[in-house]
Length: 574
Image 1 (tube, rainbow, N blue to C red):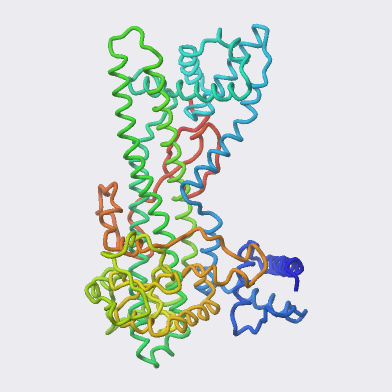
Image 2 (tube, rainbow, N blue to C red):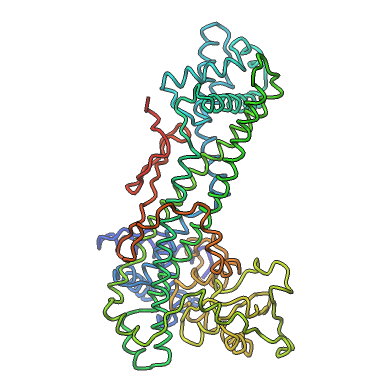
């Protein structure tokens, strides 16, 4: 079937499934449906052959199978896929997000900017109107206060007049459009710097919140809450893993566990763990940025005080660059409040996709099977085999990498998100973290880690065999494509762009090694009170981060129900 025709068929199938789901009271996104179509087609037990044209009966069967899976409310695999689709559609790395955020802000200022740069004012009233527009522009671009607040407008007007009196409008109007835009941006930064300096001196700063102080509360609160949820998730992972390890050597126990979908529940919570690590990592980066910027802000303010101290007049060449630097730092702090808010929102919204683990695997059943099992943490597993390393002399044709002999060892991109390929293949899908210290196998320009020396040796005897097993397992449990980062191996199966989740998340040895160092990296802001933490899995004693995003840049944004801390004043607050 030609690609365009195949895409048309897939789109038609997706629309039909969406309508059927709606008829059953379930509103499902096209992206999720597309992923489910891919999942059903990939599963060999469903008997679809991608090399031949789908008959009408095939399409009907495909729709039926997709419907069955999409409407199954007690399936951890579906919860995992929903989580993956939601995260993929809503997560962007910090750099990309801020670039897009600034682009949106520029577009919102577009009409205000054009009203100024296209202005041909001549009469006194027209010039006064133009000057008021510039004041509004400065306020909106800086995001520090509302153009409807009289005190704020007066403060901005006074600051603007000190560096750009209305008498200079004639010269401004002779500039080119590009030069006008450049001067408007520069004026905004200088005025913002003046206002920030006045605020620090206690002589102004109307409508300007103490962002460093706000972030020093919001960031640790968010980190503490995510950290707690991460530890709770890991505790569940370790218990599931212990039971599955015990069952691997007990056929009767394996049969008993079959109805509980324990491996699927493990994949669900492992995926949740991965996403929390990504969110936490971004917030830690933000915390480090805020700490650095706060110090720089203080240094610039102190420099200004020393420069201006006891002087009637100060050359603009001395103070304007500092005002601009202050403004730039403040803009970055505003960016951080946005990033923390978005990440906190994302964290809140992926929690429902954990599903009801108590429903999948009741605690009474779990306790019964945990009897006699050894529960180990990922860190404990790594430490057990730290000295048990691969002997390179045992392998003539394979290349093994070690930290002391490999440059950028901790930056190598590890296959299967760092999980042991041999264990996964040999135990029909058990996920155990690989230990890079044992030795990393380089095979066909890809890198593999293992949880023990024995696992490494077994895999090395026949890598293709185990790689094939992993691939086949992922066809049956499609959530593994995202969890184990197998996108490239499956991206050509469904000729429809939405069927492939975007590859946003990469994995390196750093993630694995950071398990052993997480105490060093995750406490940029140590929690002030740890006594509130509870060990109950159905609730948390850690206060939920409180974030409110409206008005940071002079505009309004949507507020979610989970938002609890006010980071900025409302634009209409006087």
